[in-house]
Length: 371
Image (tube, rainbow, N blue to C red):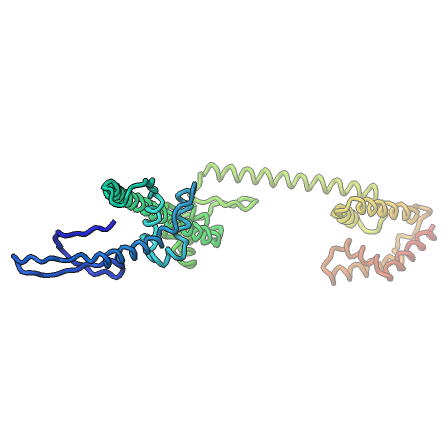
């Protein structure tokens, strides 16, 4: 409906780079007081201008809610439409128009004659209702925009907090155990300051703290007790270490006695003294494969049994050592001095050599022939 404003007061005229009604026209004239001018209505021009405005509105109205379409879906479609993007490049303005378009309800059409006054009245009412709906939609859209902006700020703050936590965790992961222990005992403000320091500065703080609180006792398992720790805990730790040490010594003695007994009963005929045979048993026990360990033990017992005849008394011999025995002793002593081994260990290694085996065989023959 065409409206002609004939009487109004203009307080301000502002120029804008993008008007709300780009095709609207206004004629301004000045006149002297007391002179009445008659202005002829240019109906043809006004009707043409109205048609152009309606054409512009059709561009917007082409994109309207579909039947049953929800507001979120329509607003998303409106915001992503290329034509609406060109028509309303400002996103806030386009969002407000989208909300307004969704809330505009189509009015039911009635059949009236063109000159029926009811048509004019209904058009006026429709225009007023549309203006009221647009105003309400604008307020609601601005409220939605404010909520979205608040949500965006909250999300940005949350992201900033998460990034700060990630940076803190990354830095803590690079700390040494001493730095981590120092960090745990600090207040929040001290922790923030500690994180901002260089590695050498953190080391200096740790050193000063350790100098002021020296270690007074270190347990057998490496636990350190400092001057600030409860003295009763230190005494308990010392008593526990003493008990643990005594038990370990007793276990070692029992194990040594067990090895000595086994060496005397099972390997009594093997070359070397008791310490050599005990070393053999310990070496066998260190074999992790149980089946292999059992086979090696059986081989040693068989070797000891097969050599029993060599030590059987079949007569008496001169107390003077044979040449083979003397040579074996000399080789063992020389090998012990050269390798820094005990005589028993050196004797055993000499027996494993070709020369040692020949001398031992010779020694066994001499024993067998001596009566």
